[in-house]
Length: 161
Image (cartoon, rainbow, N blue to C red; front, side, top):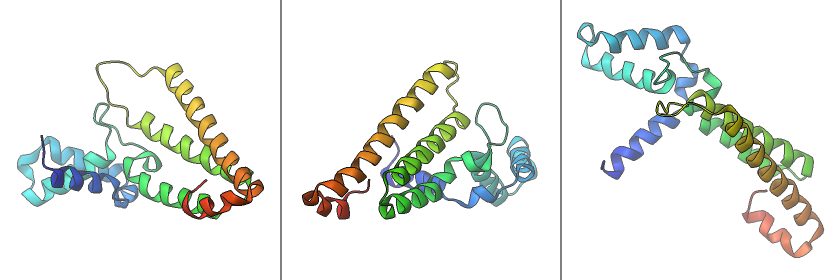
């Protein structure tokens, strides 16, 4: 087992939004450095490993579309959370929850790397539909509950929709 600090550092590197700006050409160049490490310095090799880890699919060895890299988690979640905290309409909550669930499903799909079993498209679509329906219903229902039950308005200050 790795120490907590090592796992936390890896998580923070994965959520770092800077790889969103890495082009496919730069990602392929970093992959070339990894494949021929003797031609690079330790610093170049470390930088290439960070780029490859963030931008290249681990099995297919192709660039992951920028918007669906793990590094997109932080900006998308921040914008969605801000929208959910400020929306007062059930439709807005529904739309934001649907957007977030759609983005999360696309990120999981684009980063799928389990080589022991193939990606089951039907199962993934069922999971997406169930999670989206639940999130949208809870979000829109929460807004309606806060609107129609005066005692619940205090909870709206603490809990996002």
